[in-house]
Length: 69
Image (cartoon, rainbow, N blue to C red; front, side, top):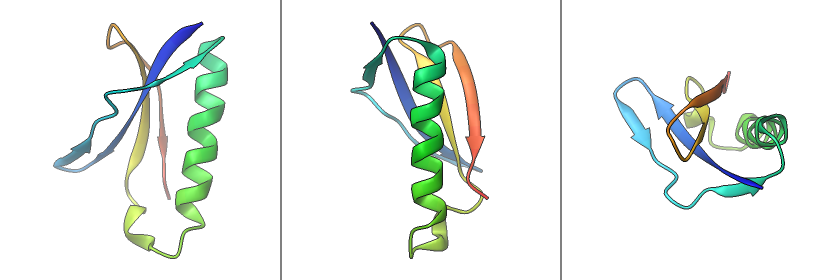
């Protein structure tokens, strides 16, 4: 299991995930980020439009950046 972190990023703003979650593969973490994106898209607060969810490992390697649009 590998720990992945899910940072919320927008122009000039970042919300960092300091705890992370463990997944068996990068693809499983990316799929989880996709579920977060879909939840944000369908939320009543449209303030998340234009943000993205970045998936990183503990070394800081970015695996994906999924936009909320």
